[in-house]
Length: 98
Figure 1 (cartoon, rainbow, N blue to C red):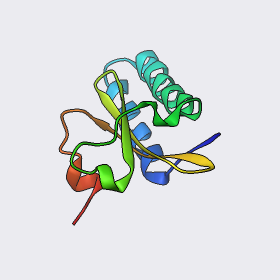
Figure 2 (figure 1 turned 30 degrees about the vertical axis):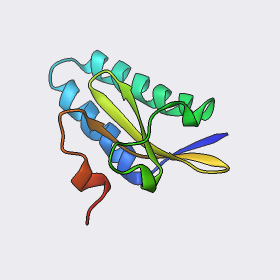
Figure 3 (figure 1 turned 90 degrees about the vertical axis):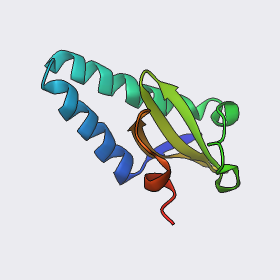
Figure 4 (figure 1 turned 135 degrees about the horizontal axis):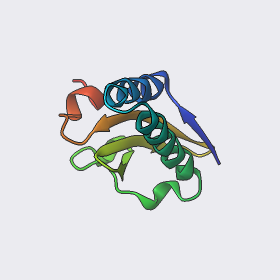
């Protein structure tokens, strides 16, 4: 199965890297690579991770990687990564604006 990162998810990776690079350039590159790898790993068993609580009807799942949550939707022919956000963020307003 194919994994596609949305423009928002790509921007999230860039923002995360920019935040970490202020302290450690090598760690920033390594961690962003780890996050990207975790996203690509969703192709194997995309339904393995839980649906987002209270929003199960939207079909959005999340995978934890360190302090970050990878939000994605498993579609019939691809996994779409929607956002990659720090776990302390209020993600509901970002993912599900009403």
